[in-house]
Length: 97
Image 1: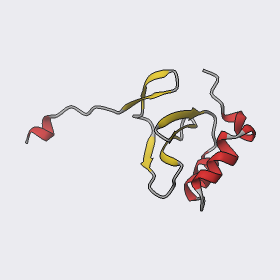
Image 2: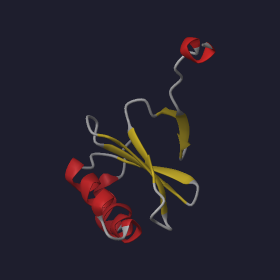
Image 3: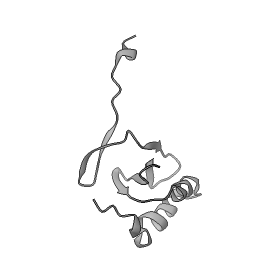
Image 4: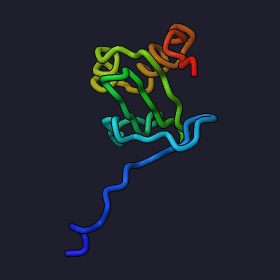
């Protein structure tokens, strides 16, 4: 019965120099099929992606939903992430703030 009265607390994480990023608006998934990508959180409305790689979170902005969907369906999430999001060709997803 006490569980029903417990307040709902959203999860917050540290991403780079940003402390206390609220994941309430994000859809998060723990990843077990990749040796590189551990967790993925995506906010479709804001087009923001947060990815945990080797225990550290990084944020990417203005990432189209199609790119997120392709990441989630890629045979190798690590290769897709490295080539299309994190690499120099993915510099367009660097957050300005």
